[in-house]
Length: 414
Image (cartoon, rainbow, N blue to C red; front, side):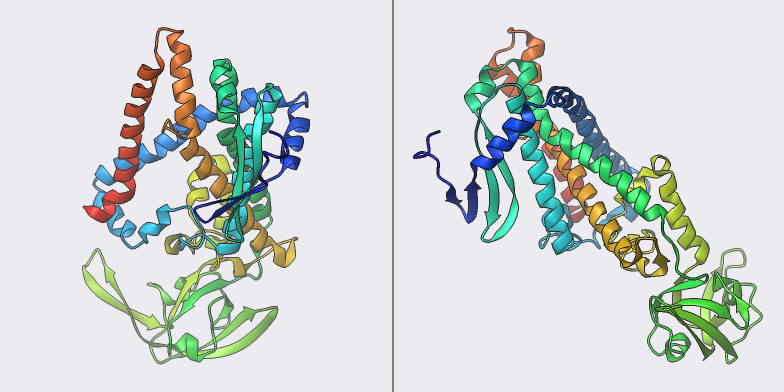
């Protein structure tokens, strides 16, 4: 493309395309590196892994919805906004605006950049590259590999270029998981005690000065790690009694007292009778629970599902160490930067992983769908026409899109 034909800025439906030759020269340099070709093969092998993970997640969700737990799961899903299925910060209420947009831009830049680098390593031309903006907000990047060259290229060449995006997203996600594990593994409770998650208005705890984020370290003259040990079934306290408390807040220990009220009522499942306990008015997270939430990250492969407990979802607030609820209860050698860093790394992982598994699915015209069609033609060894490959790919696309719509929309419709 000559300089006269090179439009640096283009507007399309509110989106600004800012083209630059610097990206193309950068991809040329990286594509010439000796490591580029073996990495291209690695990403080709990673793409079907990403597609298999995506398919497994959706099929597992179907199995759960059809299981005896299905009604309970559907009830919970209905408490979450349907917009949670859209991966755009500002639209999805559970994606943070700043960290979410930065992570999304990173995911899209490495995704598109990988297409271009692998294409150049194989000698395929890149017609254009640049950044995408919605108004003034950066929303990603684009790399335009020459379609004619891709069509005429060897199937293994085209497949490697198509697989590069999802492959690099998987690699970035794995690196982020390792960083997240190392960051969270350094967390320790800031003080020994029971963390206060919430305090009921006008409750004994509220009137005693306790607030969310405090840590009760002493209860009625004894060290405490779990308030239930003092106020649960084994309690000797009664409503109306006054107990002395020590709590930690912002580096300071404060003494106070609370007059217990009546009553916490718990049903005894053996006698089917209600039992009353003195009431203080807090929801807590015990020190053993705080420690367990961190130690689970020391063996990430044994509990991969913990990484899909989104820290902004209410059900995950008391499970994820770097959530807005639990983060205040920890300290780290990284200081105050530890929790924000863990959150940022998590969102980079989350958006790269989701972009990879969705883009790798054999849905045309996504990369996975195009790679699937290239694979069909290669397996057919000239006996399968372009039309037949397109029809088969279309059938697979319709089946997978139907599955996804069923999982995403089904709980809200039925």
